[in-house]
Length: 171
Image (cartoon, rainbow, N blue to C red; front, side, top):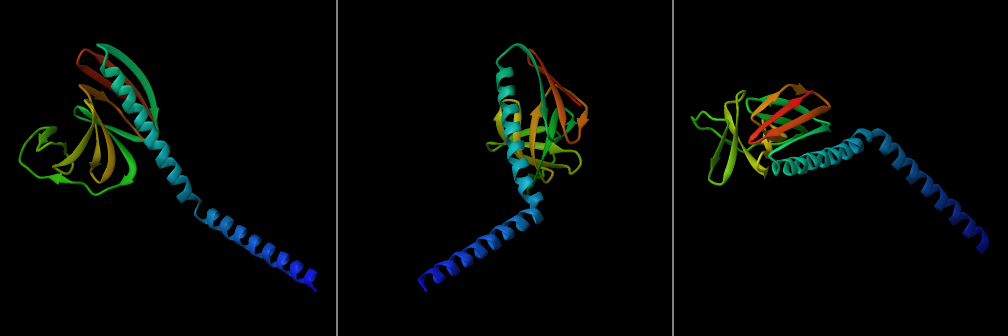
C-alpha cells in the first residue's frame, strides 16, 4: 500500500511540474517583447556609458577623433546632438523669456527646445555631455561646436576634436 502512495505522489508531482513549466513557457511566449525590451534597455544604457567614457578620454587631448556605433535615434540641434532613448519620462521644465541653448540656474543645467519653447533640466555627465528628460523622452545630449546629420535606429558617430572645437557627424 505504501508503494502505491509513493507512486501516486510521484505522478502528482510530475503533473504539477509539467503544468508549471508549460505555464511559464506560454507566459514567456506571450510576453517575449517585454523581456527583449528589458534586455535592450540595459544594452542601450551600456552603450551610452561607453560613449561617455570615450568622450571623457578625448577631452584630455588637444586633437583626437573616434568612431562609435550606437543603437539610438540621434538629431543635430544647433550646437548639440540629442540621442533619444526608449524610455518615456516626465520632464522638469523652466519657462522663462531668455534666448540661449543652454543656461545654468541654481545649480542645474537647462537645455532649450525650439519645438516646445521650454527649457529642460539636465544632469551633467562630463564637460560636454548631459543626460535627462528632454521633450518627454529620456535623452543623452552631446554638446559640440558643429554637428551634421541625423540617424534613426542605429547611429554611426564620428567625433573630431581640434583644440576646443568638437565636430560630430551622424549617419
